[in-house]
Length: 234
Image 1: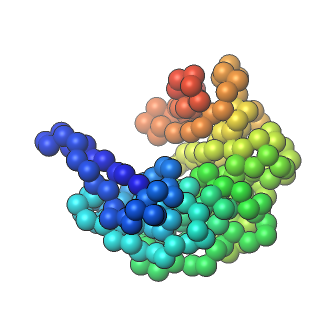
Image 2 (image 1 turned 60 degrees about the vertical axis):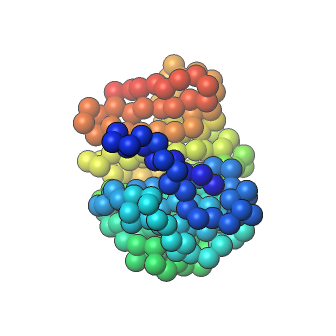
């Protein structure tokens, strides 16, 4: 579980949390998320949650080991940075309401299918509205909570391709518009999941693994698996 930091002034440096070797070896990829109100505060996911308030100079373990699997998604709410969510490879979802000092029990509930949580994203307008994507080949891939994760609704409703879904993007000015990407392209809903339409267009027929909505110019960037990055004016 290695984290490296680059600064123009001093180049690259090891900024890894002080993780025990057995825990470090259990984590294939480290997921990081910056506090949107303070860029020196960063959360990292291993088997537990780590937090630095010093840009990686020192770290603290702020959760116990959660469900025994690696953390696969981290979200710090833009609307309220005290609200932090993490998801795990076993499909667990955990929440902090005090900036990582304390954590809930697993909030996933039987509604979610128990597969890897690939992304968690809160609405930029309301930290209680949370979207989750799941790496699942069955009929449920995208979920929404309007009460901070206490309850979940399947907003896929069988309308999306039956493949793993990987990422979410939401424009600040239109928080009911949600973009998701999957092994079968990109889809969008403008009514918070009641209806979906495809935006796949001329994207290559490979998994689309990440999305970024650019607020300045209103474009959506899609990262493909091995076929470069694509951009669409939306």
